Every structure is written in structure tokens, then in C-alpha cells.
Length: 581
Image (cartoon, helix red, strand yellow):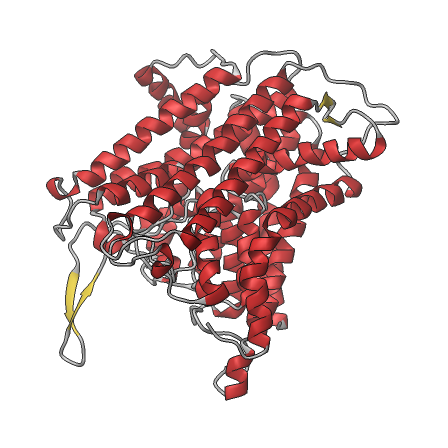
């Protein structure tokens, strides 16, 4: 590692630390219904939306009604995105005359953007029209991110309230997240990106003649407006197949730094919001500290591995003197690409400036583990906080078992129901990753089968053999169930088998965490807060931070170590001995 690279990482982390408090304080006021500096401009829009959809602002919901509202909103969002893709060829704003998406691809994409995953089994510039990019995908970037924030706020209320039956109103929380967070941040971000050279146009693609006299089609479109919400909503789905490595999406080091900052803006701020809303700011900083330790560990593992390079190339005299440059964007370098990879896999964003498939085995291992940890290392918009609170519940439960005392968190007893719900969420997502990975490693089809036409067995879609090929499949399902969306791009996933199974993994990874956590919120809201005694485990100090970090690592390692041993771990040792895949 170089001093310049370490300095870049340190400056980024300090910037995240600096924005966490003001962003978190603002969000706490927004979701408490208090006046903010944005109210004179945005409050009329908020009230107008309530009148339009018939929502009574002061009416709250039990957790079951809150969950029902979320599910109904998500279902109709999915239906809208699916139908637009299926009718794309007949709709306007399609200057390239792109055909409609196939049923399985439309299903996969609709699920992907509804669940805030933004996995793309297609190249955006050759598959989706301007209308679908804007009206379906970009709109869902707002809606799915706002839904995640709403769930986090509902869970915070469950912890903060005493002997109450309600946890807020989903429609109000959703509206406030869109109006006060994502709209102004995305507008400011889009204008900034336009000023830096990110394109925004409705013109058709441009055909240019190269110096060799050949024709080249240059794709373009309404990119800046999608780029801003893609980052601030931790969505990650790019207009172009190359995502943020494309100069039309990310033209300069400044835009790259701002994009990285936007990814962590809301997840980091929500830790401060948590502390403010539960009445003890130390609790929020404890979660921030645990997330930061896990994040920085991942960054430096990736950076060290990529800076060390590939010994096979070094032996042949083909490697650059300063590390593994394969798959790296030369405008940004190894350090920044490693940092971006850690951010995007920790935050369930999925945007990329380097191809993770070309990382060294240990670099790929760190990105995999970031996702398999439950996307709680800052995580997605809202999803990172409620995921980390899930682990906090398990951490105090484990501590209670060790000392023989009923576990408590923020003065609330953690009993059988809360632990069962937390374990349901963990088991469901882990099972989706491991079962689908195992099935895709052995399932076989005929060459002309509908399920995997042209590829035969599911392993026929892989670009690599051996442990790296297995890692491509494991990464795909980890990304889907973790609602991340990035990929080891060596896997050709646009077939019915992968489109449908990855879609199911996305649904499990989203809703079988959200629904149990809402049940926890409802249960905790009805409990009385207990007085602090000498036997109460403090949940705001270094001891609890260490316990929380250990819980995340141990559960992740116990669950996924066998699979990781068969992929990046064994690949690393084979690479040291000269093995290639």
C-alpha cells in the first residue's frame, strides 16, 4: 500500500464522519414532523401529496398495517415496472427502437428495482428505452430507497416508545423520505454532475466514424438524473453497462469522490438519527463505530490484496510494478478503485468503477463477505441500520446467555419473539444464497432448454472454471439476497434460470428481513422501558462495539466459511502455487 492511497481512504472516511451528524440531525427532525429549513419550500408539496392519495398525516399504524402498506406499495411498484418493460417497443421516448424485454428479464428487473437491489442482467444502453429508464427504473430508485428509510425509522420508533401499539404511518414516512431527502439531494446531485460533464439528453445515439474508417455508435441519454439518485439512494443500477466506470456517468476524480460520499450519506447519517430519536446519542455513535471498524477492515484487505498484485504475472514479468491493474479504471487507480469496491459492497449500492471479477482472490473475498454480512456495514438507505439493529439484538442476547441474565437493549427486554424474528431474517437470506448457489452448481439442462437456452447446464454460463467459476455464482446470489446488485461479471445471467432464481433471492433478501424487523418493532413498542441497574449491559461503549463487531463476523464466518473456502480462499492458495482459472 502507498501513503497516497492510505491518505485518500483517510480523507474519505473523515468526510463521512463530518457529514453524519448534520445529516442525521436533519433526518431526525424530518421524521419527527418538526420544522426544518426546507419546510417553506417542500411542506406544500408534502401536504399536496397527502391530499392527492388520501392519507391522514396524524393517523398511525400497528406493525401489521405498516407491513401491509409496504407490501401493497411494493407489489404495485413491481407491476408497473414489469408492464412498462413488456410494452417498451410500443411506447414513446425510444429513439433506438429497442424491443420489449422478455418475460423473465422483465420479472428480474422489476423485482430488482423494487427491492432496491438494481441487479442488471442486461446492458442498459442496448436494452432499456429512455422512457423505461426514467419512468420505471429511476422512479423506483426513489421509491425503494424511501421505503428502506421508512422501515428503519419505524424500527427506531419501536425502540424509543413505551407501551404503545403503533410505530408510525408508512405512507407518511415514505412521503417524507422522498420529499425532504431524495428529491432535493438528487436535484442538487444531478445539477452538479451536469456541471462536471455527465450527460443529460433526449437525443438519439450518435454515430461517429473512427480513424480506421469504421462506424461507432455512441450511446447517450438522460444519465445525470439517474446517476444522482442511483448513488444517494444506494441503488447502483447504471444507465450504461460499464456503470460508474463509464466517463459519461463519472467523468472526473471529483465526481467519483462525490459519488462515493453520496453512497454513505444517508446510511451514516441514520446512525446519528437513531441516537437522537432514542434519546441517547451515544447509542448512535456505537453503531457508527461498529460499522466503521468493519468498513475500514474491508477497505484495507481489498487495497492490500490489489496492491500486491498477481504472483503468476510477476513470475512471467508481465505484472505492473505497483499491483493488479486488471479491471481497474486507470483514471482513478488501485487505491480509489479498492475504496469504491469496499463502499459499494458494504452499502448495498452495487455501482462499480472496477470489475470485481478481475480482483485478486482476497480482494474478491472481502467484497463477498461485505455482502454476506447482511449489508450492515453502513448498508443501504435504511437497510443498513435495521440490519445492524438485528445484529445488536443478537449481540445482547448472546451476552445475556453468557452472564445468565435476561438480555436488554435500550431498556427493552429482548425475549423469545424478538430473537426468533432476528434468526428468521438471518436464516432466510443465508438459505437463499447457499441453496441457489448449490443448485446452480449442479443443475443440468439440455442445450436447447428454455431454462438456460444455449448454455446447457447452469455452469455453462460461467466465464471461468474451478474455484473462480464457483465464486461467480456465489457472488451473484450473495449480491441478490443482499440487495446489492454488483456482480462478478463473468456470469452470463440473462437466462430464465438465473433471472427467476435471482429474482426470488432478491425478494427473500428484502422482505424476509423487513417483515420480521417490523414485527420486532411492534413488539418492542408495546414494552415498558426498564430502569438501568448495575447488572445492565451498557450498549454504548467499546465493550458493546466489540461484541457487535464480533457477532457480525462470527455469524457471517460460521454461515459462509465452507462456501468461501471452496472459492476465493482455495483460489488464493492455488494462485500462490501458479494455478490459473
